[in-house]
Image (tube, rainbow, N blue to C red):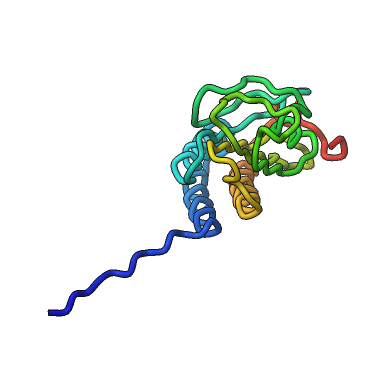
Amino acid sequence: MQTVTQASQAPASKRDVYLQICQQLDALLTGETDIIANAANTAALLANSLPDINWAGFYFLRGEELVLGPFQGKPACVRIALGKGVCGKAAETAETIVVRDVSQFPGHIACDPASQSEIVAPLVSWGKVLGVLDIDSASVGRFDDEDREGVESVIAVFLEALAGSDWPDLLDESRDLEDA
């Protein structure tokens, strides 16, 4: 008797995981232009789709500080000054920051002491920084350049869904890129 064994399926690459997340996110956000609803669904999707993360969420720029938005994870810092910590620095520079080990990042703000690595990407639209998407992991070295590309593609889907919306509150209190 011959036994047929199924070949074990190789784990999906990070690129494939982010592609799937972007496809699911596009389906979730299509037709919805409310920033809070879309940020909540984006954070939930990331928290349930990315392995080895303990926090995923948004901070929105209000004047010279980031204010906590929808997230998944333990309670978090509510306000972060522009330029402070990883989130504040990403908003200030309008660049994605990947931190392999948060203990090595000068001025890191430890909202959750379990977080060991972090990726923060700015939300940039209409020539302005509107806020950041922050994702943390309890593992050192969790994030890399593939995650940077993936998270930036997630932000592109998020912002595209909001392209037809009116964001007067965020636009009034956001930073022009020429200030970054």
